Image (cartoon, rainbow, N blue to C red; front, top):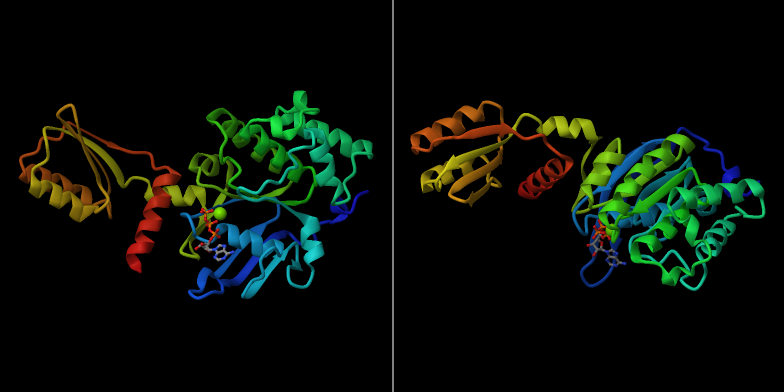
Length: 331
Ligand SMILES: Nc1ncnc2c1ncn2[C@@H]1O[C@H](COP(=O)(O)OP(=O)(O)OP(=O)(O)O)[C@@H](O)[C@H]1O
Ligand SMILES: [Mg+2]
């Protein structure tokens, strides 16, 4: 049995990040990660979300020991990155954003075998070989085994990178922006495959992505980062519930008078107001359920007729944007 799969999870916690700080030194030091703490139970699928520069990739790199943490501790199945980098690398695989995790001159099959063999998972073992074949088939790459990676499209290259990381059979896998550059169909396939992997193989997945559809479909929990800090750490369902019942869409004939616009903005500064074919479409998030009365009052006082009003189903994207906006306002 290869080294990578002989690593049995020593604890039910796959990943612990505790009080992590990372400052990139320089003339103007960059506080990329500030006091980040979160924990991922084994078998869980979590999303790491945050705007550009929030610190997501830096956290992953600190965990893997690719970047040295300024302070704080990261552990993978109980092994601390600073004391046991080898143990960490043998139980965690990663597809890092924009990194060319594949050798373009090698074929698809050679890439998968090569990257797995670096970690002791050899295709000479029939069980591993079957696993690789199954994985490649799942990702629709079975007809491309002999194709050099450089001849593949961006999306297929990305799939080869993901398969090459998964072929190591590590219990923890980091996927940093796995759907970047993928077309809608391929991203959709990945959305279907990732939960399958977690379920069938009991793997723990940490997925960083700007693609909220992927995160909402795949992750049970999300850790949301902004400016290097964690601003939310909760189950997707709870975050959605937080914003449920307070998001409304209204349509009204004609343009909104200035005082109505001001009133709407006082309830939600980020309200969306669009006029289309002579109809004003308003979408807003109310600060409290009772604010709906205030909204109706102010529209009536401004002489506006409300034609329709519907409660929008919140999605993770709205929840995310709202949380990040509030955090920025707080600063
Ligand atoms: N090697 C480095 N040297 C200096 N600053 C860095 C380095 N790597 C990252 N940073 C800075 O650290 C901060 C966090 O970057 P990081 O790449 O972790 O963000 P991210 O959340 O992954 O963003 P994105 O969504 O764009 O991938 C940014 O301000 C970035 O410019
Ligand atoms: Mg990143």
